[in-house]
Image (cartoon, rainbow, N blue to C red; front, side, top):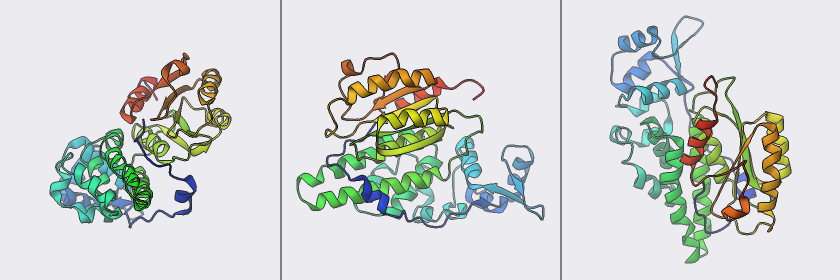
Length: 315
């Protein structure tokens, strides 16, 4: 459930940085989306009238399509994006139509962009992967984790590697926040998930991955971030009436009783109706975590599969 970071990343470094995003349209006209897909505007309007694309109306009666809805339709229909710029997402302007037609073609390009500090390109590549049909969990488990594995080893060779790793973590965080902004809004009755990393664990990226992956599955997520006392996780779960709580352990510098605290946490969450999903490269050994309400996750894909199993049919 976590990439292997070689060097601990202080949480306050990212808290002090402002994420710099380029402009993104909030909605498109039928003409905009038709241009992006290479179809006629009349076809777009017909699909909207048939209920295939959800639209809103301006005060003047003109159709408008939210970015999230446009991307939902592109993913569902499988139609290729022939004009990325027409979607109004500036970070996609760096890409060609070819990169938005082959979902697996950009993996190495994303790894390279992250390692070279090309934030705009990295954000665009992450968006393109999602638009062309890959799940958030697949993106996290695949190229984002590959990139962080690569940069995580650099600090072994020089001090400059630490700075590259910090920069790469920031770019990954930017990409995930940008991706979160185009996901469909969860239903009002959607289940809630909350979680973070325990006290003493400064990694924020894995918790952000978990939150974004669950949001991609339609959950309402409450990301508590890094360095959170586990007692507060119980309080947050109760406050948000969570059905799922995640905890990721990514550093070996935690107190030795983290497994004991998780075992104490599990029955309290069960009483609240919440399942506890745990993961991370520094997770205590399985025998130390034996509990009927502790579920060990090896990846974001496994976390989202587990989350799907928790959902009620009408949720």
